[in-house]
Image (cartoon, rainbow, N blue to C red; front, side):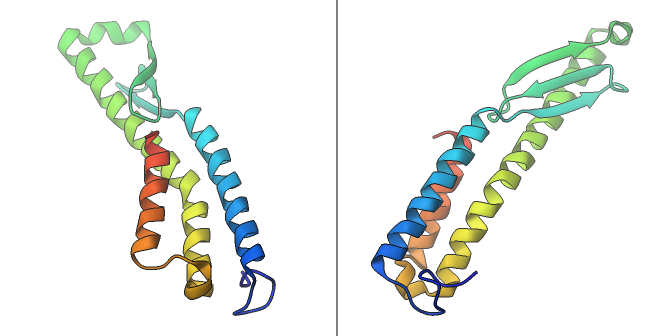
Length: 137
């Protein structure tokens, strides 16, 4: 990726503003996609299947009638296991969605930290904001 403005090591404030506006647009798009995110988990030989939202809350639960033979304690454990798997899946999917944004912002800083306007602690602030977006804060 070249420095903003198209010339290595150079760029104008206008170019920087444009870059930040593009990144903000992608951030909003990613945030919208995160609201639809679902993680999937299965257990008990796939007789229990759950979908969880981005926060790990159950959004859907399917229990195959054969799972009823497990008994109440085993069925409860199967549901909890599937929910844990779903939460891990949702987390992994969220990380995957956020990775390109984090990499782009990190790359922008590496290109020309002084011109990018954020480096060191400021970059950590940006990463914290991205994490908050992922969590829906």
